[in-house]
Image (cartoon, rainbow, N blue to C red; front, side, top):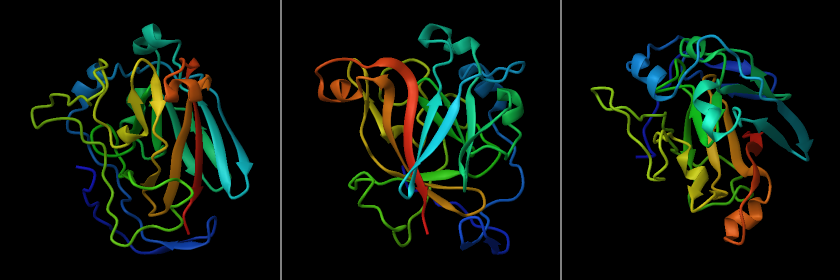
Length: 241
């Protein structure tokens, strides 16, 4: 399920920002098959841009980004927009865009609201961003892209546009490609599973979700308590050479 190949297209170009030769994966917008269903199922907004803050600091060779995807709280999320971000050589940048416009844009890489993290590709993305979850590795252990690795785009609609939910049991939680970052047992627990995310330009980002809560993530993870300040993500990431 996690290993679906993306087709590379276009000529190789030099990305001087990260110092590697890249082969674009896609360069043109792809129409979304279940757009109408996605607008309803994911409560996409057409008249508002998220005010959630996105900040990035550097920690050695890694970036550490904090994203406020709280969307006004769990009960208010369905009436609030998603946060859109893109990976850059200077850090994670917020993209000021509303949900419905984002369906036809390649200008973002990842979108977050509450516990759902979407990629710009497949079911709700016009680009071709895909990921591979390295279930048997830690973030530190991943020092290169495994040979022959393939990437999967979000794919949570059937042919008749019926949404496919994940196994969390929570309502409105589609089976996104990045789903392995979390589990649920009374609170949102981070698995620390690292993901390799391939962007449209062919570059690859290594990323792990370190926390979902502003505080108390460790207590949530080990079953001794619950986190506080939900949906304020801390991500650790870096470009792969």
